[in-house]
Image (cartoon, rainbow, N blue to C red):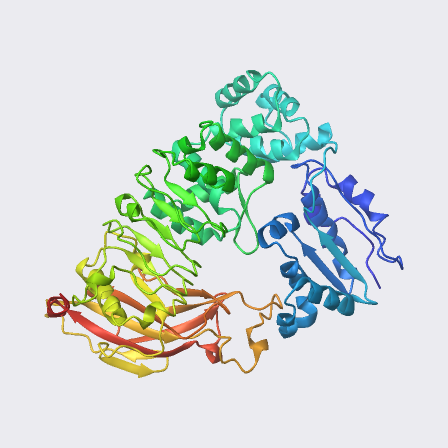
Length: 599
């Protein structure tokens, strides 16, 4: 027996949705034997996505196939194809055969075949933007604003007069009510009056003004983090963003990220990825744009047209610290970097880099991943904090000038690097020396490195452990006999692990299906047991590795207390003993004389 259409308990806690859900119940009659298309239109911030999700949650159990495809416009603009959306729709049906969808035409055929004669509920969220839809009524607006400003459905008695002014300013728009209310939460009447004075100075208030008022209430560092997230990090995993921000600003940004979530500037989805309402992101872009009419004088560049203008006009960029050139597929090289001495991050699809990059003494991140035509790096700045990402640079041959290759262990660079899938780079005759020189760098830094501990490791293609690692074993554990406590010249242990992508030799692809979500695990990570507090587990996306890889890392002696070290593979934090990707492992105790031999 089918349950009647009712409003869930969850939806009752969301203000202003009851009447809208009831209006959708009739045209969405799930017992109708026909195809129905229903559109919900309106300006950004009025709650279209919320309404769509609530409707989906209430109705999906009445359908054989159901799917909520969110951010359709954004996904299509990014991928320029519908294949990803088609796969998401059909995965519950096709499972391991999902790989057979390789283009839109094939996806359309499978869609017709799989969904024919089935009862289907499909929601496409954010496929376009239209103009107007009315906001919440007074009672609904009062309730929503109070829930965010006081965490209850009615305001405090002493705040009623101030409360009314803010309601009038928000004009019933849910996003403005939520953002302003979250900003005013726990603040006293003086703060409310101060913000109201600021609002009264605006002659023609708009949604942007209400959001900007909340932004102005942030501390200086909170503003910088918010603008970085809005310009560069929407859609990324929170853990990855926190790592980048920690390194960029030299602080712990975790608490600020969650403060921004608490104040409704950003949100996170079920996959712990950062989300942000379009209007809030547009406000951030406007704030950066208002720094100067000249893009070269702004603090951040991310729009392709602005970057093209700056590069082609050779504009000096004294304020620029981060350039994101991702997806700039036609950009083959860059002009002189001598005018942007404060640059800290750089990322692109380069074929070559100018020699002037050596003058960027403050450069900390050089993102070159997927620069498939890049052959060699020029001289780079001497900066111990510099980290270079050359993942998937399949043509890259060397990390240094060829004239230096004749010097023993000449690959002793100041910088650290990632080199996943760099299949040409590891064929260089000096590559093993490069690995050993990294261990020298890690060990020479002592127990408390001055650079990010997350970068004290190397990952690169290779199926054999170098002979230098004296303790070697097949499998996922290795025994190490530790020196006695009286030994004072022991520095630490270097570890080397050979691992593969779980898809490479998997006889049963269904083993990678999560039993809870019924979807394939997105990534795996290798943990070190016993757990070491300063070691980041190696994390990779499933299906991303073309060959077996080495993972090399170093632990100072203060952290080494166990004589048996094992490497366990986790899938979404779940251990699967039959799917351990570690094939071999090795270790080498590093002493002071090792440093002398390497140098």
